[in-house]
Image 1: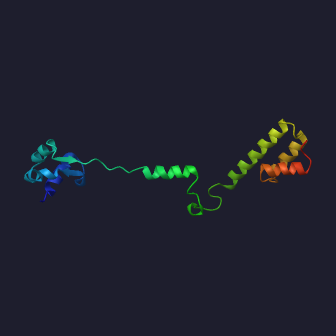
Image 2: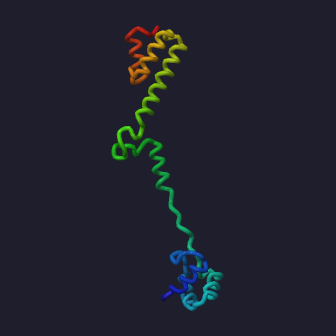
Image 3: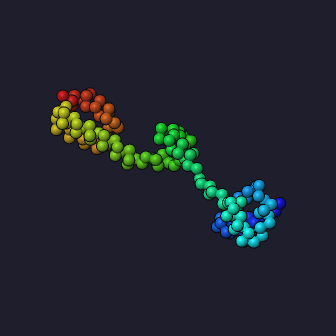
Length: 148
């Protein structure tokens, strides 16, 4: 049974696309008899013709992916795009390192593990890039008998 005309009319009345028009399979005979807009409107009132709900985009997969990334997954070599320092620029890496070193030096000075002269010396060395981590700085201070 050809119901293209009825579908087209219903789509324009319901203000939806033709694919969203649903016709009750048990009432196809009645629908095929409706050839005017008025007839189709009556069938819509009788619930023989309806508009299907809009299909949304499911966020399930994106939520699942975000959850995995939060756990630290999906970060292997195959996922990395861009140059070596595109993800964390050199400046950013430097900032994190120097801040940690300076914070450690400050705590050491406040705890009086080192005197102000030693503090200043290690501070300048850190600024010059002599230490790559807190542990290296502590090792250096211990090896050179700078810690009390």
